Length: 155
Image 1 (tube, rainbow, N blue to C red):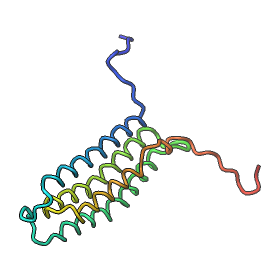
Image 2: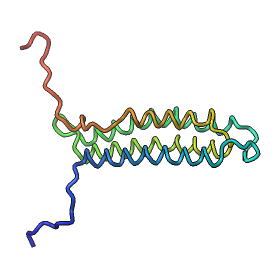
Image 3: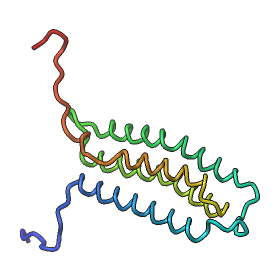
Image 4: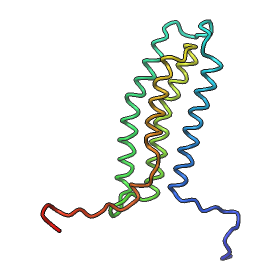
């Protein structure tokens, strides 16, 4: 009974977030490439006559979800704040929710490519959401205790 299981792998929360972050971006690029190659380029395959409507929907979701993802992640961080740092559980939750919220404009953009049979300009919301995900590479910084600040004139 006190023996450790040899089949378990101890993964830090930061490593886990980075792995999921990487696979999330890889999946995003893969699905966009597949849909773009298979469905785009033939105007006869377009399922909608007004090609701007799916683009507006995807762009609207991008404009709403990216700021909302930052807000929700920060609220999760606040609820898991202990001492001067975010707990590992809070860091995991915050980043998972953040990445999941970025997937909605991506899916809308991929659907727009599918519906319009056109890559440009419907790929713009996908690239912008991917850029937001790429810019938020998990560094683990919120889990590190904040350095004490000295007041003005203190040494």
